[in-house]
Each structure stands twice: as structure tokens, then as C-alpha cells.
Image (cartoon, rainbow, N blue to C red):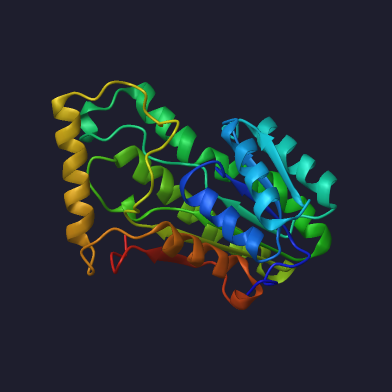
Length: 261
């Protein structure tokens, strides 16, 4: 396992916190050279920590706004310049900003949810694919969500439904060209509090009640009646990213304790 990604360069978006951070930590332990991308400067702290614990110089940190194509294009160019290759792309940027019944979403909030949870994946796939196609080999793992069937997150669920469709279409287009494209759909996941929250507005009593309804629905929809762990999500992502999944493409793998999303 320690050399599962030896010699490979992996670009991970949304790497500064949560699932993305854990994917980076485990990938570094398994020999990957990493381009860690996030719009938060926290990504530089992760780079320093990985350099100290893994003893490798093959880690770069890139601050980028991936909701814009220019941000994705620049991040891909920096990763390729550093490593002369991009073998794996993990599209992890996304996450619910607001949680409430659909009729309470303002139009600008709906647009913001789609920009956050669909466009970074669209842009990064477009930016990285040309590098992979030149090598005729690569693996893309998009992080979707079982929230494609859930409550109080309709715009987010729609965005992640788009991620699932993108995954299928790119797998069709690129299967014979050496590029595998899959997605993992995480369920509820136990994680430390976000150091930089997605939603900085103060939550009122009604907002808290709506959020609790999401938690209750998520747990009740699983067969295991619990949230998953960061390791359980990261291991699924890294499996699909690795050559151990060499005959798997076009798949959306739910990792939600039996909830298929």
C-alpha cells in the first residue's frame, strides 16, 4: 500500500479541509506527488505538515478560485509544470451552503449552490483532460453526494446530479483513450468543524431545525444508521483513483452506509 501511487502526480481540489485533506494525507503516505488546490490559504499549512510527516518534496500548494475556468486552468498548469504529468484528478470542491426547503431559496442562492458544487468539477475536468490525453492514461474521481435524493438541499442535489452526468459522459468519451472517470457519492460524514465555514451567516432557530431534519433524514436513510468517517470516504476515492480499479469507469459509487442516493 505504501507505494500504491509511487511515481504518480495527483491533483486534489478542496484539499484544505475535510474529505479532501484526508485524501491528501493518505495519498502522500502511499507515494503520490501532490498538487493541493484550495481557495483557502489553509492549504499551505497542509503542505507543510505533509512535508514534515512524509518526508517528500513532491507536494505543492495552490490557491485558486475553481468556480472560474481561469483558476482551474492555472492550477492544472502549475501542477503539470511541477511534476511534468498529472495522473490523477480528485475533484472534491463542493458542499451545501444553505439548508432549507426549496421555496425558501433566493435565486442568487440557487446560482451560488450550482457554482460551488458543479462548476469546479466541470472546469477542472476540462483543464486537466488535455494533459492526461497526451499520455493516454489517467484517472478522474469526482466527489458527488447521496444528497441527489434528500431534503432541504435541492440546488446542491441538482448540482451533484450534474456531476454524476458529467462523470458518465466523460467516461463514454474517454474510455478508449485511456482515461477512467468515476465518482464517489459520500453520505453523511463525521468531520471536525470547518475552520472556514461555507455559510458565514448566523443561523436562526428555523435554520437549525431544517439542518437537524437533514441529519435525521440522512441517518434514517442509511442501513447502518450512522454517519461515515473521513477514512471511509477517502479510501473509496483512492481505490477508484488507483490502478486497482483499472477496469472500472463511468461508475458512481455511493458511500453512504447503504443509502444509494
